[in-house]
Image 1 (cartoon, rainbow, N blue to C red):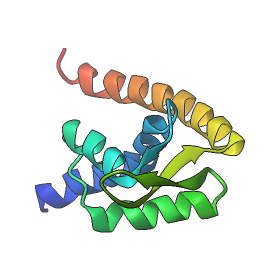
Image 2: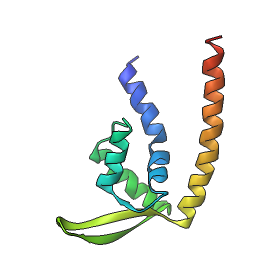
Image 3: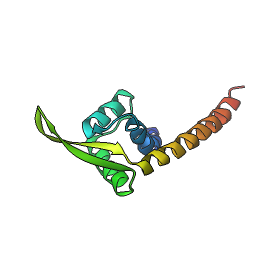
Image 4: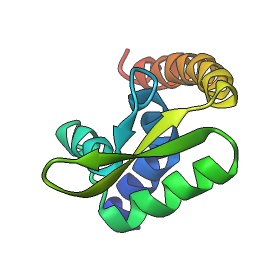
Length: 111
């Protein structure tokens, strides 16, 4: 079994949650989202994030707006819709429950 593949699958499993969380504070454009993920050591490439943003938009969780940039072409800023905010709240609850369960299981082996 390939450990790098397993680690990549774990990251992919929480990527949508991370993106929605990043956008919970303010609208951001794709490069800002990508930088935030990279700063957190979530190894993500542009080829992964754009299709995911489109999928989240098509699901009604995100919207976007174009904004002029002083340093190049206009930027597409993404933000949460009301549906996206409700969805994120549900994911927050699920994440807390999952994190607690995983900690119970993994810490039980250490005792």
